[in-house]
Length: 416
Image 1 (cartoon, one colour):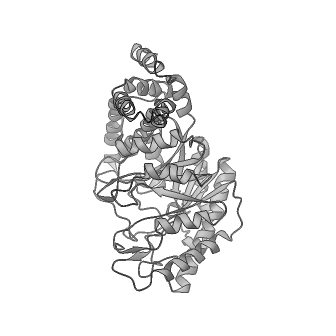
Image 2: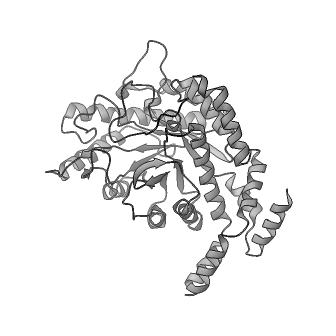
């Protein structure tokens, strides 16, 4: 323990904050790491471009193009991340033996056995996402809302297959699997029928959920979005739709992605609102810039506020946290590591905040002192607490971390 941390611990103790306890708590909070940052959301089951509202920008060298490369890169990234991790997969990352292929509606657990082996060797659970984009069975931009029953049935069967795979993940790893359903279905211009697609979506989800599964092992989520590329005027899976569906279907959680709302909407404000009514909720943590651009998560205002609300609301056992961003314009490992560490910083900052004392000031109506105290906290020696957390987790500091990434780029990525 260095002198800087000793002094920081004493300063925080004057506020009634136990930084040792905050560090110990953070070590036990799982954060789900998304595989798709490593290959720009390409996956292994198709050769064509991204479609269905998904887009990456940039062409940084060294992109992973095989399961082996993706796992190798993820392994290096994991070594540079403190804390407890889960693995987050999309169905498009199924791994097939040579000469084998299974379309998404008939995927089986065996197609993810290598991922299970990877996760178990590293002591991680696995979260999962059906992939409702980048496929030739998307007709007129629609999947689970399609008026073409053959198309809709294909995607319903995909959801059922994913439920079976999610339960397999949970049983194999011993950790519940969060299975998140998001579709990009919608219309570019003003639709003539807003109700019909949503009724078909509701029916599709109910058919998927008719697949038997253990609700203790699989946490099914429905994720909303305000708009997407090519569906600017209408999305079937709006916030109102997904919140209402989760509220009326046992065992279904709402999932909020903080890039999936209007620019002036703050997910940090929505977290306590949902925790009033839902036993559990889920988050996809990203950084939107003007739109759902999935920039790398930073230690910025909204990221800190989201973490604060989870901690303030005693939500650490009720909120499933996953990262979701993809930047092809910078070193992909650095993107993974920077985003993960930024969210860890935000959680630690929240754990080092005297939340009860600040809430008392609010209840007393002492808003003057509340503002001053919150401003003073921004200048507390948080950096020393963060460095102590990294030391205890045996991972390097930021500059040392970057040096390792740059060496890996020269030795591995640039030789691909």
